[in-house]
Image 1: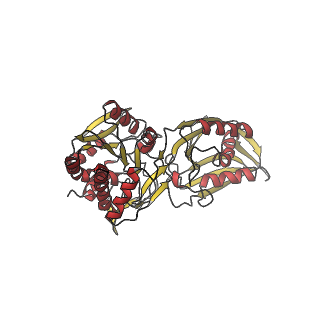
Image 2: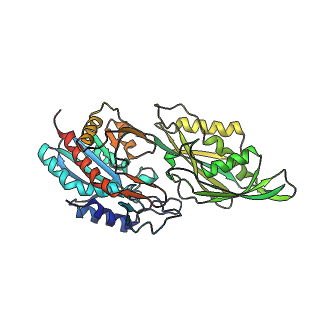
Image 3: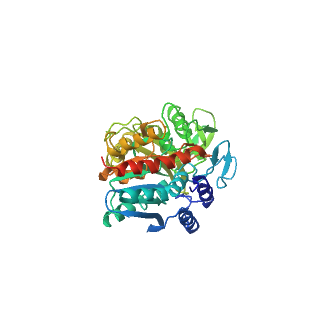
Length: 438
């Protein structure tokens, strides 16, 4: 057996970072490195390119059904506060630490290690498997999963079933929301005002660094907390900063210079930035008619702020059970109009959501596989969006799954080593269950 842990140790140092704010994307060294690991697992990599992003895949077998296994090799930027080099895998206390160990290089390693055994099952029962790894999931999947979907369609290999290896917790995920981004811009408008400046600082209080898993009312977002004070005390904002990493990563710290007009003195404020911050409490509680009930509803978090010298820009990560951005954009524009704030707004993203019935074959066979492996047979909704949203709306029975890990998108990300082999057994087992005759 090919050890998934050994493969994972070779993937983490490849630094397959996606960071649009700095122009970083998985480079040639990363792509070639993933291809080499695939070859170590007995795969014969093919590639699809779109927008300088590469999806790597292999196909085995022929005929129906076609079963797609998908994971992604791109990772978010490391961010601050790591205890060690995030791209040097470190094994401590039964865990392997490193950026991408849980999201999603652990799954890439597990699928590669399982490929030969899955091929044997295809030889026994027939059908086709496609095992693919995309390079842009962390920025939406438009040049990865979407391109793969169209390639499979045009080559008469469109899948009946999809196992999206981008979950966690060793549970079957049958529902996930869509991902959107609201970009708000305000022109800088410096002005001398009455009052005195005070420096304030806020810190994140959340069980997860992943934006999708933020729970309003339970977790504390540093920028939302700061904006609430600005709104309630009628303060003005002079400057804003923080540990901003990426639109789907919660900032650990935010700080600002605020002007209190009730105090004696004279100070400089930025009225455009003030309008931007005043919008935060409302936009992060935005209300929209949902396409289907979700235990998570809508999650909106302001995670990236930048200043170009003339414009203030704020990016809001939004997760919602909506097929496209139409309803969300209408509600966001109405908010800006009602509050009479001098900002511009743009909504992007979408593509669909994961919504597979519990009565579907893939869910029932996945539950049977978990029971056979002695694992808890849990079927759950999870907060984060994933590449399965490109296939589920097209009628593909899809689930998300993955090993157990923690600190996803945050410092000291890790995967529980024992769960890698169990995830491997699940991927192999569910393939056999799907190929068995009813």
